[in-house]
Amino acid sequence: MALRPRTVDVHVHLLSPEALTAARRSPGRFGVRVVDDAERPRLQIGAEPPTRPLLPALHSLDRHQAFLDQQGIDVAVFGPLMDVAGYGLPAADGAGWSRVQNEALAATLAAAGARHRGLATVPLQDPARAADELRVAVRQLGLRGAMIDPHALGRALGDRAFDPFWRAAVDLGAPVVLHPYALEAVERFGRHYLHNLVGYPFETTLAAASLILGGTLDRFPALDVVLVHGGGFLPYHIGRFDRGHRARPEVAADGAALPSGYLRRFHYDTLVQHPPALAYLVQVVGADRVVLGSDHPFWVGDPEPLASVRRAGLPPDAQAAILGGNAVRLFRLDVTSSHSTEVPP
Image 1 (cartoon, rainbow, N blue to C red):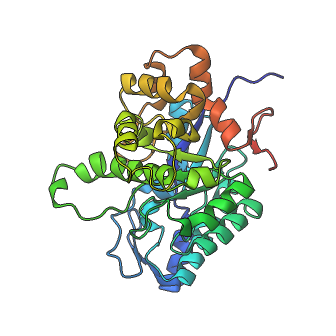
Image 2: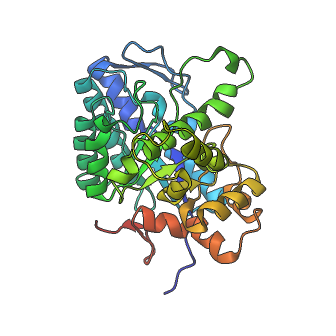
């Protein structure tokens, strides 16, 4: 029996309540504590200050489900909460905390049926451990890839030190979603929420540029990387990158080709929240490189992600690809039956 095309949201965040339970049960294990509040708990990760109070929907699949149903989204690929990734923890503790989160996320999604899939968090402070955790997450837990913070303890993401992690991602066929959270202190972000409005797209741009110019994309031609927030500023200022490549030897110092030639090496989510910007993104990178993203449940997310795609004036085949077809291919989702299940790698 033929099914209508499925819609897939690839930019949603969930911290499994089972991870919170585990942290409450063993306070301080792996350097993680819950600063308890039943509705809006906070976590203290190592020596970091406690996190902001967690929105209830961040640790409640039911509240996510209500949003997805309201918006007509069939499938979600749930990413972790980067606030609690724990990159500042000692490597062994970071690996342990990643495992707690990944096992909890996999269990929560499995208990809810086959409708949704998840992305792993990994201890990026130790790339070899990050590679090991990704292997466990994909092969044993059934997670579909990873989500990482591009701010990796001040080290450029294109540094060869991260190559063990990228190699594992390629070997597993596991997409990696870059999602910013950690920022360096910038006083001029001030009180107007500019850390989010400017800082996060900046981090995504910086990370993407590092992967291009540092040679990561050349070393791993089969690597799949997803840039949230429409790719930050990269697609909209790619001409500046190309001009720099032609004019300044530093830009091409590690042997990268013209930056615009790498735009289609990335995937991009739809979270630009301005229809002409989305239309431009599709024009520049191609409809086959764009995937639906809402960033639920955050305030700066898109409250009507499907409507945003439809307002961009794209042809029907492009809309269908962006609303679900591209994500089905990228994350190996099988939608030929009444349930969404993964296609074996």
